[in-house]
Image 1: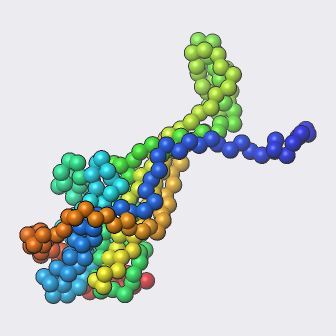
Image 2 (image 1 turned 180 degrees about the vertical axis):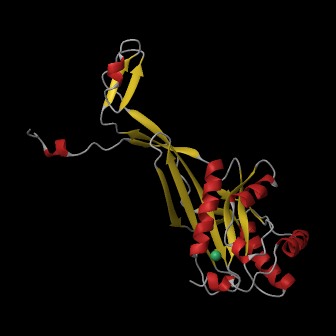
Length: 265
Ligand SMILES: [Zn+2]
């Protein structure tokens, strides 16, 4: 067999049409960052020492890509449990929120730890949050062609069982066709991850997950992101700080002993 052109040797590339872009940076209103650093401060104030805590970043169903608030769930006081945020814990917190508020990521503090980044423990927790968030907040991000080697095109009412033995996939249409492309929907979602420290530092990442409906192909990726801080004029009021102080007293229990070691690498 001879090929006329080199181009004939190339494998066909599946056609892909992008339907929606997932966020490349994190948009957050300044109030949320103020609140996170205030929690750090209150933890030291209420519990007389620094330690880690975790919460969720919150958006709205209409605008899940904006961090509009930070929510503090009851933190578990057991170190091992802390290291393992369960889907049940996330679901229970989501259920406590108003209908239009959605969890769009998680935020945690390394307190006064030297380690300014995401640990392997954090990565495991990020995957749990990513799975939970994307299951609820997925959207069609692309239509991607499914390349089928032997596509058998059959016409309704005009084929025999032996025809079904042909090809890897059969497409049965109501009228004869000679060519067909099959495009599958790729659903995608994201979650934010922010880590803060007592000294005022912060790092953040966005995690992405996509899944193709027919081929079942699933991808997970991440990127280091910046925060686009949005000033809305909303500030933490003295009253809110007192509410937060109560939350810190009730929901955060000191876990000082082994965690620094766990997250120092
Ligand atoms: Zn961490």
